[in-house]
Amino acid sequence: MPSPARSALLLAGLLASAGVAHFVAPRQFDAIVPRALPGEPRSWTAASGAVELALAAGLAIPATRQVTARATALFFAGVFPANVKMAYDWRNRSTPAKTLAYARLPLQIPLILWARHAGRTEK
Image 1 (cartoon, rainbow, N blue to C red):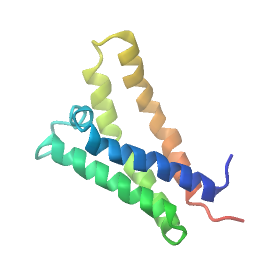
Image 2 (spheres, rainbow, N blue to C red):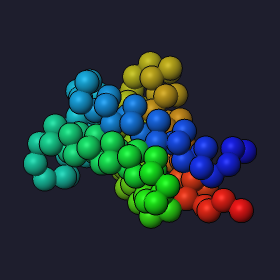
Image 3 (cartoon, helix red, strand yellow):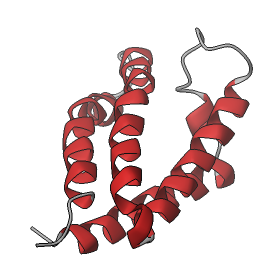
């Protein structure tokens, strides 16, 4: 397992990539925003992308890494309902599409654990 500092930088790269994707290709993210949320899906997509970019920056800076790692773990837990919605919405799609949607559900657990590891102090 990489050191917490290296792990934080790798996670920052993942979050930065995802954050940029929210702005470059927003429709795919709009589609999984739970309709129970107030406002337009595009607003939630943009907000989520901005949060991912902010988390990436916070993880990249050693002074803010610990608190940002905790916030990142909470963020991953918070977006879980969108993944559930995607799995439900895609239940009648092709087998590869359903597999992708269902695979996202348990993926949140290792992402949360990754964020927690990234926030550990070096020994």
